[in-house]
Amino acid sequence: MGISGIGIGPLILILAIVLVLFGTKRLRNAGGDIGGAIKNFKKAVKEEDATAEDGTVIEQKVEDKDKV
Image (cartoon, rainbow, N blue to C red; front, side, top):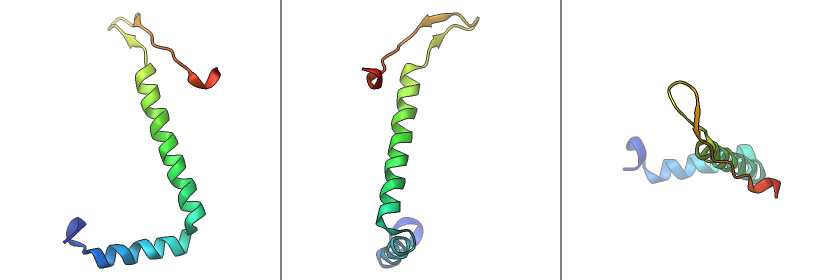
């Protein structure tokens, strides 16, 4: 048994149908977009200002490698 009681055979069939419907280029672009979104989210979390309860900035991390 695989994920949620679905076997390997049906999972392969679903993957084949998705490939036929969307094509490899569109799936590759979607994967890149998702990866970029995750990367930007992690970057934003790291760069987020550490603030005190009264709103004053305690620490600020700013590293932007793209602007070099």
